[in-house]
Length: 379
Length: 191
Image 1 (cartoon, rainbow over the protein chains, first blue to last red):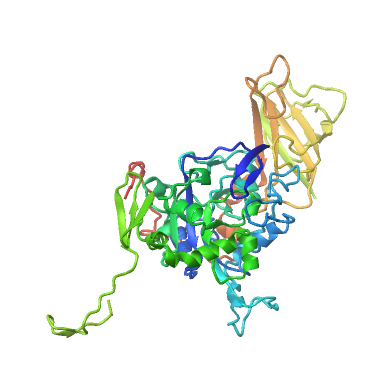
Image 2: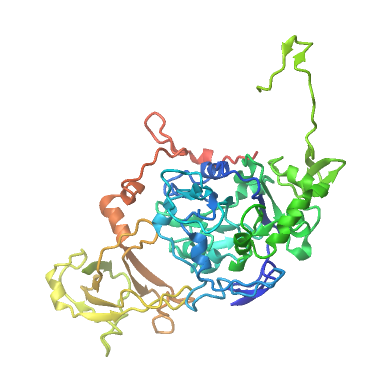
């Protein structure tokens, strides 16, 4: 058992292996104010990676409706209830409770819930009942204790800094890449024990009954190696996502898009940080959702993150970064905003894309004199 | 209720292990017979000449996660040899047959380990040998047996009621599933 530094928790914690941060850490920031659950990301991933035998039920990327949705069933409530009190210091800078590693029974690596095969078989069923708009055929028959609200939560594997899957594998078949922090299951070393499926609190490690080994989101590493963003990010219709390489706060760089959103602007937060894995997917919280629920998911800093997001209209640099999301297939290592135009660059400083922060508005007459015809909006 | 398995192994390996000793639990006496023991046969008469030994099994202690106890703590073993072949009959209590399949279902299985090379005249560590003294492990699983007896246990066998429309990367072209040649596999795409 080693002591490692977890900057999400503001303290050291126990982990099976020594702290060893990769050269670059793959990370995605999602703007939950924009996700419409079109599921294009889920299908982009499925078409690329999980369209084979044994993968029929798998969604390495899935989108679920909170508060009542989850894939697999009840993954979050089941692991949270095993964690005991999850208290933070008032300002959210330090976690006072225990992580899943610290709460573990001595014979286990992490406290966990064991999913059944059937738990994976109901993606999105009944999730939108809590919008209050469904008259007949509700799946959930309960009195809601709160105003009706919901938000969509798209999630991939978080390629955690301290993965539970990696720690729980008795064969050390799971490894974290030095070059980009992507966590992979070695398909030839895995024997299908399913310890990773049990241990991962986010339930992103999945058993394949055809190959008889387990598999998980690969972070689209072939694309990332070529400087391209993952399929789920590239194909996002709402342009809610940006993938980059995040630095821990002591190395954060202001012109790195992901560092800027997480460390500088502090509008993007990791989800369920109290579990203790230092996950590397970050969310801009949905500003209209219930604050107590959000505090459970993101910690007490969520209130400040929401205020920061609401104040973005006063920050042209942040606004520029937001329009860069979804503007290019390439990974932007740096960005800048000058004179109302946002620019994305690769690691060499070569410009990848430029986007006007405000779309120029052009007013044209309805009659085109040159062509002698009416202008219409149909493309 | 009771699971049985026969393993017949050629004695190209030295059978110096498992000599007769005091407690029946610690070692197994391999009876010498004249019959042909090279084919698995649960009902063969030569098993009557073999004494029953009860071996106790322990939950693996080597790495986390550790099970607190094993589901099967005892296995009854009989063993016979005829100088060329050695055969083991294993008997253990099990409420139901398990042949793996979906998540959470694991297969019944057994393993017998033999030292290949002694370490200073002694058998090497029972925990899969030690440096310089490897072991042979014979591993049988009910799931492997099922594959052998009934053909590879496919998705349709595990989920008979599943409805799957197609596998986009496995199309049928002119009635066949085309396969890439080795040359074609070497081609690497980059965009």
